Image: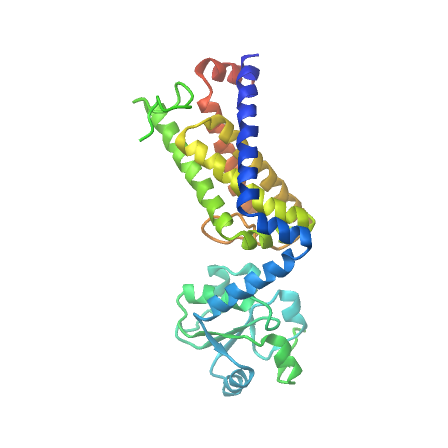
Length: 170
Length: 163
């Protein structure tokens, strides 16, 4: 009985706090609601993500398809495929190592890049120019102390369309 | 510093010299701080949070927008109330309810096998999984523990007896 007496007013004030928060949110960020209503929320999210990716890419070295091909032919860089394992198994840049962005961890990096010097050139790529997985993996590798990390922004699609060497996992 | 006699503050909660009350004050400040930080990061980047909500694939776009706007502000108001000691038990109930919603969303997403970022709004990005579930479950237990600790002494005893 006494507990009920305590919880009753607590619930009342909890509803007040929740309604106050909701009202403040609606007033302060009505623009987000409008995008949801008008069906433009996804476009807005994509635009913000693209802007964010461009800002983050500005802080990391990037390579074009031609530059990457040259580095591949010279065998001077390690290629990292940041896509999911299923996509990697299907087809990937010849000699690339799979480090999925969704599973990235210090342990995985240590296992996949065992014996690779921190200053060894590393090129990370994902599916296409629109994906951000390569950026996430490249940033993570930088945090792990790798100093020569770059992103190949064209992604696997451009490489494959150009007919450059690929591998499959048998 | 907030004192026991601050307006709107429930009697007997903060600040006495007893160790228990000091612990309660610390717990309020820490838990309130964690939730305030999490909410502010979502409020200042609403479209990032919208992307995280959308990734769960549980809601249509209109409700994604509503969730994006409403949840962080509820979190912020409740965390602020908890920190300043205004209706702290009610603030804990709001935060607990939000944690139940987060836990349900994470559990459903795990059951569906989606591999997405949890969008929890704390220091590091982490995927939906057992760690996120454990983290949110622990937070829920701490919230409920603090709620029980904040009950007036006679009510707390009744509560324990009822359990």
